[in-house]
Length: 433
Image (cartoon, rainbow, N blue to C red):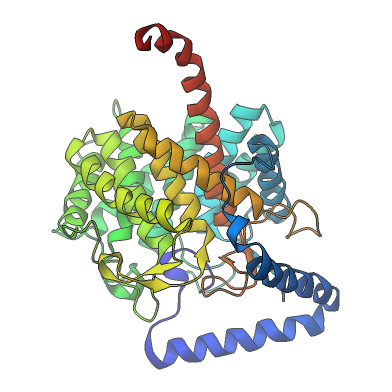
């Protein structure tokens, strides 16, 4: 799989297997074209092997903060800025075999809000400049229909529901920050295309959907439409009903939730149920539910998130992929999925005041901070690998841009919520005494 988005993956079956073999051969020969990458590759493989062999008991230690969250956030920002290509897009990944990939529209789209959040929290003008450059590049990619293409930049441009939704998130935030009318116009065109492509049951399937089938993790698209509804509440909606479309998808996803908290319908033929996509489904539902004031949907997410919280507290880690009903799975760590679950737990703490969510998220963030390399060449320093160990099944031997995005989001949420929590603590003390 070349990226996190729906349209960037191979078809299942023989064609998918042939594509995976071809990609593996291409990446392996990348070392011949870039022999300077041999030493960093060996160093990372040995480092993860030694850590697993000798430090497993201490890897998820919660008692010592080895790196301040602000320092970790700075490392993540440096990685993202280094990954921004001359065209303004953000590379999908840095491969230890082949170096940087091409710009990736999908992830560039939802990195834009993260960059603006960092600029606001840290007063970093460089982050805001990068967000505006990325937005200009995204605008240049929009199709006449309002859709955005799937896959890496430079490939055959095919409209993608998921990518359009993730880029819509960036456009809505960029308009909020800049108030440029052409950005809102592009966002409205994207929203209109998504509404027109939605099925009667609230899902997205057929052309534009990955493998032409519906996916519950497209709740992330519903989240984007809910944000667009908020942005266009006083004008531009004209009965299109972005909020109603978001809720139709929300209801469709909720109909796929089992009593165990498992969400059916992730539908990745040829791939396991990576934690990344499970967390996508939960994040999309939660954020959409918060915007649409759907307490029923929040409670459903809380149940699923609680199952994963208990597994994390018990085992000190989460599996990289799960079987239905969370019964077993693949024994590696999907770092992006871990970061996303931290975001989910932090947002649930924010809406429920249940400190157990905050506690789990802080532990998760401490674990992830230990796995960010502070030194190394560009593409490595500050990066979040697809898997731990780095040869795990999800995005092996790569540092991925969406991993940096979601972990930066988790640290930004941590900073905001712990500051407000600390500020309110003195007022709470007299009541507790």
